[in-house]
Image (cartoon, rainbow, N blue to C red):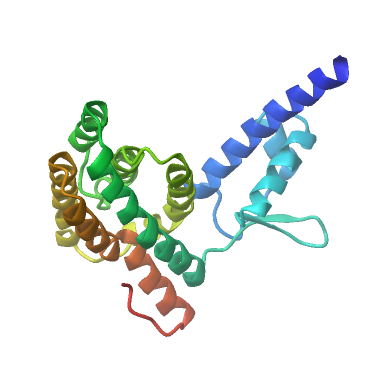
Length: 233
């Protein structure tokens, strides 16, 4: 029985290492292109190198870290191509989830969305991480109301990976007006879901995504990389 217990311990520690490294990467605390000091990270997490390497393999399969032939591990660089791909997937999935939420939301879903809505602030430099977190919580409350487990898992992953690009958008000097419009659209989305307006919810969500921080980040990254910009719609 002991080998099974040991494997379970390693599995648990691997999950802890994976969760923490993923958080550090997506939050930008581990910057794109930076080298991971594996033994230092293992020490800081109070674990051996084995579960940390397990976590790194998982992150590599997600494209969040890159390993070279010398076994160096670096945080994956951000790119306009990945940002656009995430944007295109979200543009397909989020409106569908919103439409399903308008059709299927329960009283409890409405309570969760209303609570998340009350914590929203404009996603500007002034509010920073607080604004991003509240924004994320509202959108998740909305797409969880779709009651489609596969769709929820897919959107969780897309939203996680888009977080790095939202922070790029947050740094852009685009003025506060678009972000206040964005805030008002969240209130409109909530009202449409509560009213059960399936078509209206989907239409507004598509427009909301097209004018999102990720869309702003794509334009900035394409300009930085010298890529010819394509219409974000």
